[in-house]
Image (cartoon, rainbow, N blue to C red):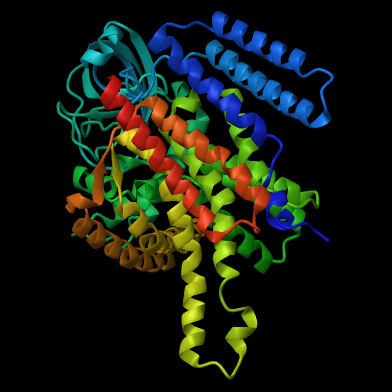
Amino acid sequence: MLRPGQEIGHRNRAPLATLLVPWGSGLIASHLLPSETGLTSIPLTTALLLSAGAIAWCFWGKPAQLLRLAWLFVFTLGAFLGGWIHGSLHQPDSLPVSWTGMPPRQARLIVKVNRIRFQPESGKAGSCAFSGTVVNAAPIMADRIGHELSAFLFKPADQSAMFIGSLVHGTGVLKWGKWTYFEGQTVPGRPLLEWDSGEIIETDNSQVPKTERWRAAVLSAIDSILSLNAPQELPLDAYLKSMVTGSKSYLDKASKQRFQATGLMHFLAISGFHMSILVLSLVIAGKAARVPEAFSAVAIIALSGAYVWITGASPSAQRAWIMVLFYFAAAAVKRKPNPYAALVAAACVILWLNPNQISDPGFQLSFTIVAGIIGYGTALIRQIRIRMAPDRFLTEDSTSRWIRLRTRMYRILIPPLAISWIAFWISAPLIAFHFGALPLSTFLLNPILGSLFAVSLITAYLSLALGAIGLVEVAAFVNYAAWLNLGIIHHATSWLAPVSWLRIEINPTVWGCHTATVGALAILGLFNHHHPRIKLRAFLILPGWILMALSADALFRNLVL
């Protein structure tokens, strides 16, 4: 017989979780402390080693309980030290603008192009490789002026833009090589690069990698299929293409502002939301075709990995795919999948390969929200459901039809509302820190419009599958379902975006933000261990802790700074 809480808590715990939190904290400290205090790794490393040695010496020969506590301290300090050293060896060239005024991920640059090669793929897409010199830049990146750079570009849409002489005006990221070019002033929604009709400076197919040409061709086909039967008066096809490819270049300025103001921009970034829908669709298709489970698992891993590569492999997409890899690899070898262990393993793999991801807002939000949903969300949904009528209640003839219908509706609405509640609170410090405001509409709109986004994404995948096998007319007809759902989303965001009271302006410090977030993640262990014995009102610990940490941070900033 299982002890109380073991059926859920034990399943969701992962040994690597006790390593990831102090290790990630060490990575964050390695990026912050040198820039703020000038503290190098040598004194902190020495202090941590001396502390670990002192703790081990003081508790040596003590009772077993105290000895286990001492080893926990030593293990935590060691993991923190490992993260600190690992991050110190891979210092980022720049941090997001929210990180204490360091150079932002994106800043306006003007590049003088010395050499350019263009490869047209079709009338709607092309690719280009270039090298040049930065001749002008925003003040925060003035040190980049005069630097040589090269990049590979892809043009995903057919909106016109000009390439004037040897100067290219635009915004971009030197580190990642992702650029957006405009004709002299920022015009959101323009694609990565356009050429003047009939004027190709130089073409050399051998300079463009074959894999990138394949990727360009696939994105061109996606663009064509998702444009079928698109309405002309609303930018609904731009929404759908952004959802499927994760590219914001399809969106105009007004559309970006609407999604940002309502807190729905995350639906347009490739993440676990997209990956779960894709994987679920592939699982259903595999079962319908009676494909063996092992072969189906391998095919799902391969197809989802190809999708991540085609869409640019963002941190959230990498996290989702690594979780899919661990999850279905366990299923292929007949082991019970563990989503929490898969999440922690994904974080460890990504941070080990690229420690600089710890400072990326997308990485932080992606892993924090998913960890909250797995840890808090499952426990909260179960706690609410066990207080409702049992399943047999829905089939008893003695109960009125209205009561049975109401109970079914409650059971349908509880999961999205609980997940939205958890995601809102656990991501609140990070959203406020990186974006300077907390959109309350996120909690209100996620459960409702999230289902419409899901239906639109399902129809998009179905349309692409039909178009891939040559059923273009059927794919065009399927697109109508996406236009219907996206039309509702468009009008809802247009109505709610101007409502100012739905946004709370708040600017926590970097220490307040990460104290609140790391503390909220640390409390996950309490819920996983004691659930379902823990009471329902205990779930107020999460918002209480977040509000207390942010309030203390604001008070400290006003009194001291």
